[in-house]
Image (cartoon, rainbow, N blue to C red; front, side, top):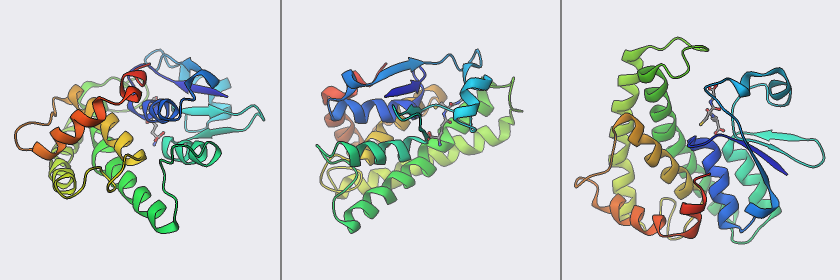
Length: 207
Ligand SMILES: N[C@@H](CCC(=O)N[C@@H](CS)C(=O)NCC(=O)O)C(=O)O
């Protein structure tokens, strides 16, 4: 398998962290694209992933998968230990629900705040700074939702570490680029973050 990734990008990092949790990093070739240089916009990449984004997982069959959530669910089914996406239908739905809450409530707005505030991709989109500011505000507001959830539960989707924690960690780390950080208003997130940061997969995911 080949994972198309990019240094410091939060979406492929979700997949790298899941691979690390499953001790699979040595079975995957990681191909790092230079997004600023537009490696992901080149024809050969777009033919395999019409959305022109990373991550993309290329299987030995020639099939290509994109979307971090879809790739992680596929890998969790293929390599079931440790389970990160849920076992029973209800648990799977619950974990997927929180993964989506974090993706929509935090990761997406942080990404929009970064793109529209920095103009990092202005060669391929029109930055709208006011939209970036609105997205930053909604990301900050979501931290209260996360704080309440983590005050009630050990982890984002309940009492064990799952893909929803991976998504939240990657989103929170990336939020630093838009100056959004957890602080004294978020004691439960701080407790959870310290625990997750101590996992070997956290250090391994920075590649
Ligand atoms: N929803 C997608 C988001 C993918 C995404 O936006 N990836 C960013 C890096 S984090 C990217 O490839 N950006 C390049 C571009 O927009 O040109 C996922 O979860 O995989």
